[in-house]
Amino acid sequence: MTLQLEKGMSFKDYVETHESIKFFFTGGKGGVGKTIAAAGIATYFANQGMKVLIASLNPVHSLTSLFNQDLTGGVIKPVHGIDNLDAIEVDIRDRVEAYKKQLADRLRWFLKWADIPVKATEFIDIAATNPAFEESAMFDATIDIMLEQGAKYDKIVFDCAAVANAVRLLGLNKIYGLWLQRMIKSRQEALSLRVKLSFRKEKAMEEIKKDPMMADLLNLNERIKKASSILGDPTKTAFFFVTLPLALPISVVQRFIEMVKGFNIAIGGVIVNGVLRRDVAEKGTEYMRNKYEEQKHYLEIIKERLGPLVRAVIPLYEREIIGVDMVKQVADDLASWTPEKGLLL
Ligand SMILES: Nc1ncnc2c1ncn2[C@@H]1O[C@H](COP(=O)(O)OP(=O)(O)O)[C@@H](O)[C@H]1O
Ligand SMILES: [Mg+2]
Image (cartoon, rainbow, N blue to C red; front, top):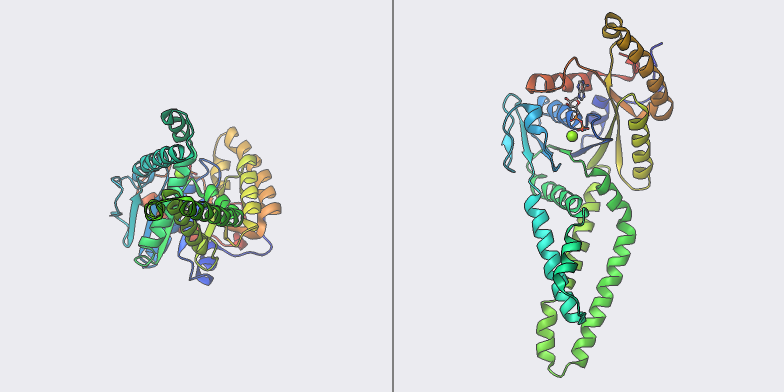
């Protein structure tokens, strides 16, 4: 049994036939190999002579430990040992703080105008513990990198845990856009009403020009438009989903794919990671042989449910992936797989 795949395309063929795609994302359940897959993709392109940036937007970064060199500091650094590859671990803490401050300012401003007699600080404290701040900050940072670095690199690969939220946000984009337009309109109405009612029209106009809520709304509207014009463009952006031959990660990938299908987002394909090689299993303990049989079962499920989308199978290595040489190995394995090889290694 080779778990042959009927049709489909290898990672290499996919990226060669989709040359215009510049932005790559890896998604999947925690711990399935999103970071190593992102590094493998980035290294593959760098080896082809392209100028590549790998960007980590996770609150806890892993590029420094994966490449086994100091990539901290929130600035772009060259990856030593891999030509043409730069890396950045984006620090979102400042951004999160800035959001909190901005929200606090807006709330204070709003409470003042609305004449609501509550102590602003309590309100603000509750609002500022919102976990969406981090996700929102990561999303913003992603868009910034796309806009600021896009022209400087041939390919940019994102290692971004918030990718699901990015996708969701895009899904909400339509509804959100409508809502925003409505908000902007009613804000405009409210403001013009204030001018009409005001005895001192010039002063009212002055205030209105400074209206921070209006500025926020317009700003958000602008960012969402920009984000969807890049993320929702299948000629620019592709999402790769990573799974292990295990039940839970497979369903997570399936759910992702369903979610993404609704929007105009390119699904680059599925990368199956951590597949135990037969020769290794046979030489191994009974535990390993049992694992091998178990994974066959899940690979069968992957074949049935995701078959034509599989672009690569990455073997389970004997130890965790650390250092440039092992990342290069991942890149080679990623790019040398073909559907004819099947899912079993
Ligand atoms: N094919 C593999 N063989 C051996 N170890 C792996 C493999 N894929 C991932 N790992 C290890 O598993 C851990 C999680 O991988 P990582 O890429 O960080 O996952 P994620 O980013 O999805 O959380 C890391 O320690 C990594 O070295
Ligand atoms: Mg990771």
